[in-house]
Amino acid sequence: MERFLNIDRRIIFAAVALAVIGSLLVDFSLPVPATPPVQKIFDKIESLPPGAHFLLSFDYDPSSKEELQPMALALLHHCFRRGVKVIGMTHNPGGTGLAEQALNSTASIYQRKYKEDYVFLGYKPGGASLVINMGEDIHTAFLKDFYGNDTTTLPALQGVESLRDIDYLVDLAAGVTIETWIAFGKEKYQFEMGAGCTAVIGPEMYPFLDSRQINGLMAGLKGAAEYEVLVERKAQAFEGMRPQSVTHCLVILFVLFGNVAFFVSGSFRTQRRPRR
Image (cartoon, rainbow, N blue to C red; front, top):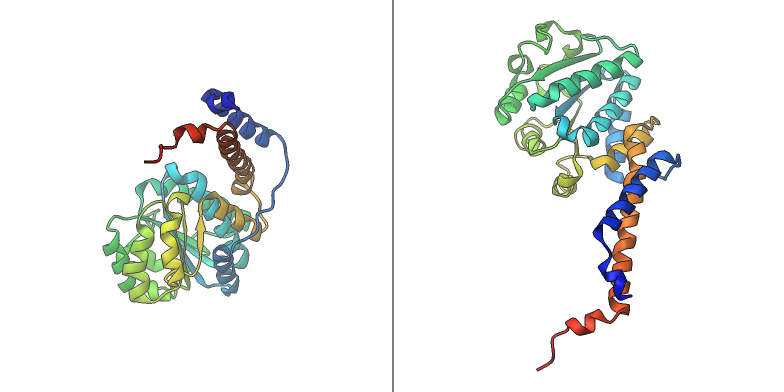
């Protein structure tokens, strides 16, 4: 057993690489049941009537694309399928291209028209002050949309004067914008809100979920995969769960094997301090 405690780390790296490559090449499915926080976002959008206004904030850049873009696409499929009017925007200048691509590509599948069924307000700096401005008058906050159109002339924004008129908002974030939306938007202007975030900041968002400051949460690739299953459009996130799950299982096996080998070999006895 002693030799197993000194395995060359390159063997472990090779095993992980083979596990990832193998799970990508071999087509098989793993169950991805929806957790309650993800289900609540789905249920809220499912309850929105056609013509309701949904604001999606793309607050991430390409570095977080793999986790958050699948969430955006799944949400847009759900909204466009139900005839909900979508308002897109971003607090991150690196998110404009991702947002535009997601909105236009998904809208074309359902024959949704720009200006009538969805709009993209684009990026504007300001953070908290921008949220407050939107809470007072969304047309003052964004005089023109991403393409230079006067926002007061856009049919999709009819009936929306401020954040108070938004039926539901979801922020997809790789930073602190969820807290910004909560503190300066939701608490003051009283709209319902959900959130999606990268896995690394997911644990920090659960206090907001427990306090009902957000009604639902998608965290990381798993959260995106769960929503893809709910909207019955299994795509990038669902496929990504296969290598991720296999790799996690392999790492767990390595940890268990290492601990068993450590105790069976008796190494722990030699490392114990002598009693005084």
